[in-house]
Length: 368
Image 1 (cartoon, rainbow, N blue to C red):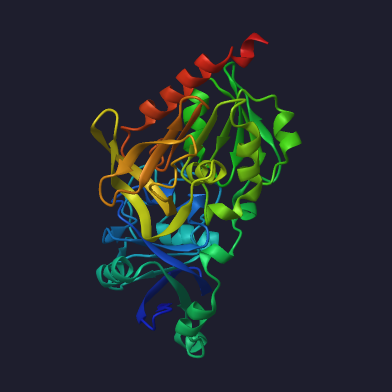
Image 2: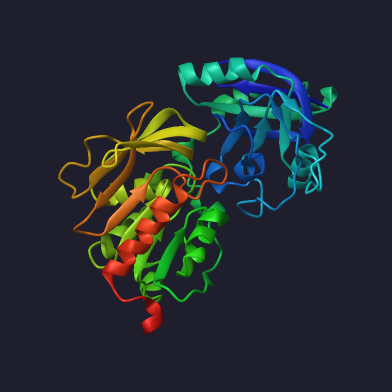
């Protein structure tokens, strides 16, 4: 098969297609991870986007399924320089090409990913269309025009695609958490479960009464795709519960909490995607290397007068990476502290702080 990529600026590149045939449109972003492609491809935060890997060889250890962060592949397509067809890892059950085929998603390789990454860095994330198939089937497809007419991420409400369809519970003997699922990664739930929390997972459009029915000791807002301003139910939930129970957030959840408190968000030029984003902790004076996946951020300075305090900043571009409020028991970070994929240096500091705040706030739910 052949593959063709078109960008809204008129760029068109041809390469080799793999995975499933078809034509899809989305937003092209790049990730700098060198491993962890299973986790990245199954991260719901990539819904609506095409994931391009800057590392030149992808697929060398195959796909095991043991590291999936959800049940499905969420990027609309995958782009890489070279895809490896003969993985030898003992846990591998299929190649990455077979994984994309099984997921019904097209892949494109054999293209100049360095050029495409430089273009995204210089001009920002762009709408894109990828067509994969036999040459005779693609000759009438104008990938550039289809990219230009595709709606932007900000115009799409992606949350109901990635959230759970009905509430469920991960039982524990500790404090009870009402988790708003906006595309949560499995390892975030795993990190909380390891600490004994009683987790009640609710859909992104859960009503206030549904959340209250869980009798939560805390409200937690997960990661997820798209523009945080689209998450109107979650914003309303934060406004309702803040000051009565601790409120925590990761990634999209961090942005939603900031919006609910009166801060503002904006779309980054090309986002933060990968496992090597440096985050400076302003109180400790140390830098964490973090895993991130987001295209929106909180406006620095817009937190003034909201009761929020900036706790961490991105050392590359000075964007906001963490906020808190001691008086209102709020804690939120922009990166993915569970670190799948990515370095593990933020997992314990964040989740232990969640545990400490909940123990301080009230008696754990197991004593009821």
